[in-house]
Length: 313
Image (cartoon, rainbow, N blue to C red):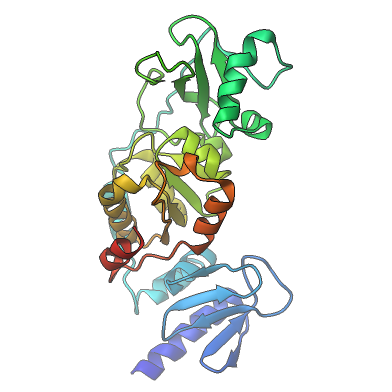
């Protein structure tokens, strides 16, 4: 029966990925991710894993390949071997999500730092420099500040929806005497922070705060906290786009990381967990350490993720 199943799976994969040839226990296909001219996408049907030896596109779910690159018939045929949890639960899970996008205004006193420097910019620029924020970061994240008003002496980091509308902002004081250090803009936190910058076809990095996201680089999304509700817009985006996730919450939030990982694995999302120990948060890590830890972050397995999390946290 196993041989018959393997043959059926190979037939579907051949239709989705193109012709293959066998090399030992592996099947080699043209890579659908990098499009290399040689068949470098290695697939092991028995183990249910795949990896491209050119671009390092890899995963532990062949169903993901079929769902992402096949058509409805391929997905339907694959259900004979594995039930897809997304199709059965996704519609009910997100039935309560509001389609209306939140739009807010930036403070009247907001001054963008992307324009030529002014003397009044100095404290804001010094603070950002002390946090490792570069000129390129300022441009990409459209960072500014308020010299007066409700958000006086605060860095303003705005968020923009996929349509380009401002839907939230975070205000961080550069003066240690100010309390609280963070003030949030009006409106709900149930947004995808800077959706405008996110490529949902690539791995996204989930972090706690905006400075963590800036440190991690492009395709990083701050949770504005350490939780991710299953009925949130961000969770919806990840699941509906089948987007791989790199978890990089603060080390002291390991229990909350565990809950998020569990929820994502329930919907067959590919999740890796980055070791953030030894630092208060990702924003305090040197860049070379971020790159090293992100590169070595292990995949979480639905069968033993508790053990893996305990091992790597």
